[in-house]
Length: 474
Ligand SMILES: Cc1cc2nc3c(=O)[nH]c(=O)nc-3n(C[C@H](O)[C@H](O)[C@H](O)COP(=O)(O)OP(=O)(O)OC[C@H]3O[C@@H](n4cnc5c(N)ncnc54)[C@H](O)[C@@H]3O)c2cc1C
View 1 (tube, rainbow, N blue to C red):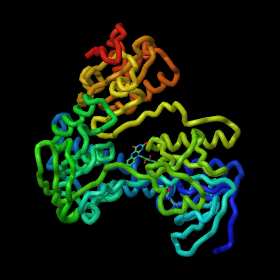
View 2: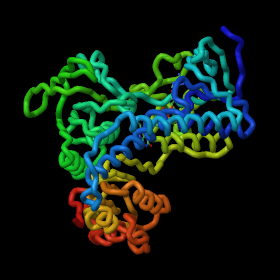
View 3: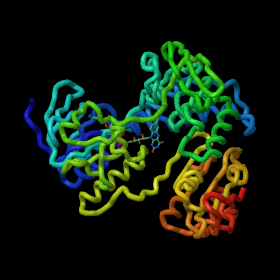
View 4: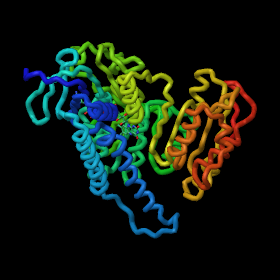
C-alpha cells in the first residue's frame, strides 16, 4: 500500500454536487481532493444534459431547414452530416472540460484522476488512470458517484451491444432505423432528435403511457406529436428477446395486447432508467448502507450512517437532475457552515427538451387525485398564446392546478414552445406563495409565452370542486 495521503476534504466524483463543494471548500482554505475516474465535471457536461441539448439543437436546425418553406425561406435538399453534428458537440464538451480543469486549478483543488475504492471508513485506494495507486484519507468524505444507464435483463440484449445515451450522443453515422427501449425523457429526447436527423425511429414502452409521471392527456399529446412527425410509438409492449448486434442489424421479439411480433431495425438504444454507481467500490468497507435499489442511505441533511461521510446527487437517491444535485451541494455546504438546510419539501421543477418542450412543477392532476387534494384546473391550448402563434409553434397546451379552497398554485405543466422558460415564472410565484391572481393580474411583456399565463389564469373556475369532481376550464 502506498503511503497514506491526508486531506481535510475528500470528494469522490466530480459531478455537479462534488465539484461545487470542492471549489467552495478549497477556496475557504481547506486541503481538498476530488477523485474522478472519467468525466471531468461529471455526467451533465460530458454525456448527459448539455451534449443532449446540443444535439437536439442540431436536430432543430435540420427541422428548420426542412420546414423553411413554411417561413418563406427557400432551401435545397436537406441532409444530415452526423460527423458535423458530433464535431459541434465535441467542441462544446472539450470547452467544458477545459473550463472545469481551469477551475480546479484556480481554486487549488487536487484533482486526482482514477477510480476510488474504499479500504476502510474514510480511506480509499485510487487506481490512477495513468497507472499506479494512491492511498488517501479524508477527515470528511463526500460521495458524488452519479448513476448510469440500466441494462434490462432481456435475453440477447447485452450481447446485442445496444447503445445507451453515451453512444447515441457520440454517433458519427446516421442509423437507418433505431428502436428505442423506454419512453422516459432520455429516450424521448433522443428518439425525436434521431428521427429529425433522418433515422426511422420506433419507441417501445412497457407501460400504458410514455412519460409515466405525467397526466394521461399530456402523455397522449406527446404521442400524437411524435406520431405526427412519423415516429412509431408502441405502448404496453414487452421485449421478449433480442437477436443480432446493434449497428449491424437487430431482431426484437415483442409482445403486446395485439399479440406477438418481430421488429427489425439496424440499431438499438436502451433508455430504461438509471442505476447508481454504488457497486464494487467497497462501500461496505466504509460501513455505508445502501437501500433496496442500491442508492446510498442518507438523512435529510445528506449524511450517511457513518459520521463524517455524506452522499449527494443521483447516488444519494435525490431526484435525478443536475439542478437537484446542485441543491444537494448547497444543503451540505450550508450545514458545514453551521446552517440547517435540508432536502425536505423541496419544490423541484423539471423539463423534457422534446419539441415542443415539456415543463412541470408541483402537482399534476394524477398526483392531486392520488393525494386526495381538491383542486381547480385551467387548461389552454398553446394556439391561444400569441407568442406561439407568431413563432408558428402552436402544438401543446398549458395546464395549471389551483387549490380548491384558496388561491394557492398547486402545480403547472407546459407542453409547448418555450414552456421551460415559462415554468420559472410559475415556480417563482409558488416559492413566494403568491396567490395565482398575482400572476393573472400581472403585466407580462407582449408577445412572450409568459403572457399566456394571464389568459390561462383568467380561466380558472371560481367553483371549488372535490378531487373526484374536478372542474376544467377547457
Ligand atoms: C441523456 C441525459 C440527459 C439528461 N438531461 C438532463 C437535463 O436536461 N437536465 C437535468 O437537470 N438533468 C439531466 N440529466 C440528469 C443529470 O445528468 C444527472 O442528474 C446529473 O448529472 C447528476 O449529477 P451527479 O453529481 O449526481 O452525478 P454525475 O454528474 O454523474 O457525477 C458522478 C461522477 O462520479 C464519477 N465516479 C463514479 N464512481 C467513481 C469512483 N469510484 N471513483 C472515481 N470517480 C467516480 C463519475 O465518473 C462521474 O463523473 C440527464 C441525464 C441523461 C443520462
